[in-house]
Image (tube, rainbow, N blue to C red):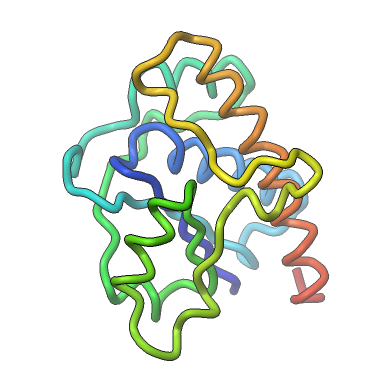
Length: 159
C-alpha cells in the first residue's frame, strides 16, 4: 500500500481538493487497496471542520465528493505513516521541512512538481478570491494528481 498525504495551510481548500481528486483517480484506475490518500494542514485553524463550501461545490460539479472530509493538522508521525507528503506551495514545504524528522526528507515533495508541464510551483490559495480561483485550483490539482499517479505506477509496478 502506497500512502500519500496532501498538505496546505488550513486543510479546507487545496489539500482536501487534492485528496478528493486523487482518490477519484485511484478508484477509476482500479487501485483502491493499493494507494491511499489523506490531507492535513500546517496550521490548526480549522481542525475538525469540513472543507470550505466553495471547495465542496466546485469539486461536486466535477463529480468529486469531499464534503465528508474533516480538517486535521499534520503531525510528526505522518512522516512515518505516509510514503509521500506533498506540500501545496513552497511555504508549506518549508513548514513541513522543519517538522520532518531526520532521514525522512525523501518523503517530502512539492505537489506541483508532478505537473511540470504547467510551469507552476505553487497551488494558489483560492480562499480570498472569487469562484474562478477554485476552478483554476481544481484544474491544477487534477493535472498534478494525474502526474502523481503515473509516477507511482512507475515506481511501484504493483499499483
